Length: 394
Image (cartoon, rainbow, N blue to C red):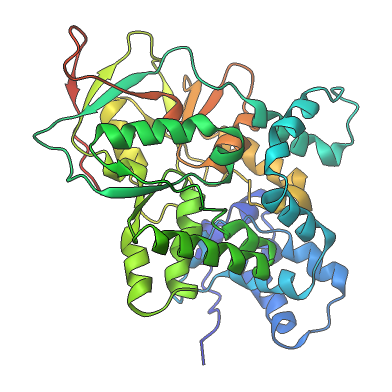
């Protein structure tokens, strides 16, 4: 029998929801004490009480990382959502699975909404929707990188997993990632049959949809010959990593786990050419879902002066955007306050974080995925300043 919570309180130190409310019942251990009876035998809570508590979770997984017994309150709440369905869960599934082609249109319509006349509960969702139509590129990349033949990693067959944000509204991230992989000598396979990782469906308690996505992605990987899977979104990486623990079996689970690789880890041995007009100050938002963050050391190697923000969660939280948009917006604002003065450009390695924080940023502050500011360089081009990058693959 799995032992339960010891009430040690370690999860309070890492939970972004508890940081917002400072109320015990909204901490992971507090919600676990209240909700475990519901999960086990139906408990005595009404449906509304279940919904009110279950929605107050960003699904970041930090409680499990901090817990000595590796208890995940996020997983507990996902199961409770599955047992107590709500219309927001079905709408979220529809948004992710069926409405991808409409994301840019929704973003454009959001920009037309009269400022100050929108119902308060919709304001944060509209701001995030506006980020769906962001600029396609910056005027000039901050740095160009190319592989140093003496230090570059061994080329591999790679299937690029782009994720929902890149697929629907940031297609240039995929093209940039493919260009970088090819510059490093990797063979980029046709991965167009990949679909959503399913992680956001787990958080929403839509387990049937999650399993369908997992099966589709695993089958696409098998048909490609089980290649390396390169990922440039931390949330996608987290969702895909769960396949090895909860979905695939035997040797195949180990092969899948071994194949998952952050894109930045495949770009080791880089020579960097910083652009003359790049910003002087920039921050880095570390996504919740990197088990091992390869992006930050990679970026620190090619963009000296990068400073990590102190905010721990952007507040996107998947379905949290629908179940509690005010909380989601408050968490994003708190996160943006954690960057040092002068960091008017913020980089991250997660599609959801990039959209959420771009919506919360104040005027004059821009939030980008790091693929927006990196370009493929030419080691043989005349002129320019070439700096060795100390980063080595994770």
